[in-house]
Image (cartoon, rainbow, N blue to C red; front, top):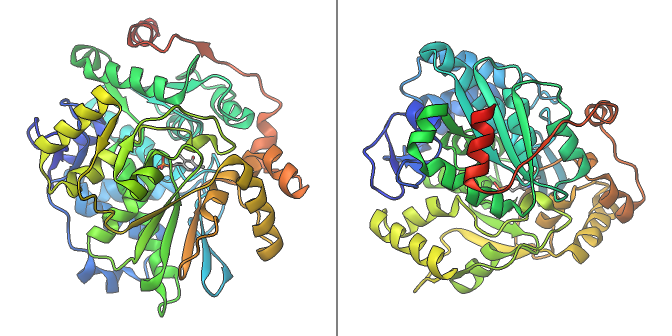
Length: 449
Ligand SMILES: *Cc1c(COP(=O)(O)O)cnc(C)c1O
């Protein structure tokens, strides 16, 4: 299997190259050259364990990794999860389910991809002998998950940009209290979008990228998308067989990586009914799905900070398919959006997506309602998935453990929420660095370290 860029200006590359580069050299995002048809494989996959399913799925894509090596990588990636099912389903009613994606080491769904990515990098460095520098920008959970996926991996240095004061105190502790000497949490003054924009410019400097062996762990990395596909498959198999083709997956959404993974699984022939993109008050995607206009707005910090973004990077992957795989059209749309802050789609096809928006005032109300109705504690991101427009059976993706956001939970339902892994962090010293959110300052810091 080869990988192509959404912007169509680089030749196809192997899986390992696409993963190592993160962003394609033409600024585009990598996608499989063709999508496989999974339908014929589903009966045989139905009874596999999570790790077996992951290996079977990835083997279709990671064709340049030896199967035995892939098997080891996958096996090591799900050992730090604290639930035997890895991605368990909770049934709240006959028509309402939760897919819990917070049983990994940093208690958010990003561990699914980043534990795997850490092991892919480690195997790659062992194979090539070339050290790498990972650069990422985070609105909270990616940074923590990346750092924990790469902790103690020799040959890897990890640099994570995050907006100072805009990630939760516990998220910051997960990034800054590791004690690891190959990890550099970089606090910037500005928003997540500022961090992401500066980071993208650093990646576009090919000479620098070569010099430091630059790699991305943001949700633009192909391996992350593919790793996330697996829990949609696993959830599909674990839903009651008589209704699973009628169930809408509700996905708390920011950068559009999580929901895109599900949509790709549907496109690969798995009969998932559809997806609801659940945004917080930063609702660029909700407005797009309602009106057909993709229009930039200011970021408004919210109670669901990991969704506080406006430019949804992975949207470009959807766009590539929505525009009939026309890379020139993708370039034109991205350029227009960059120049003017908006793009108006004529005849926009939502294609399997619906959407909803939840503002901060509603988040607490929803947490309380879900707790009273089902006895279930949803974190503020997950709460956005429980907004009211319930249309047939749904499975809500629980993207973080409530203990990561104890203040919001306490205010909503007067309950303490804790988790042992978070308690141990509170005793440790914070180590972080302050950097200007400019490509020059970031490059200078990376060179110096
Ligand atoms: C990252 C994150 C999201 C948003 O996921 P995207 O893939 O960026 O759409 C939602 N909830 C939590 C808890 C997250 O960490």
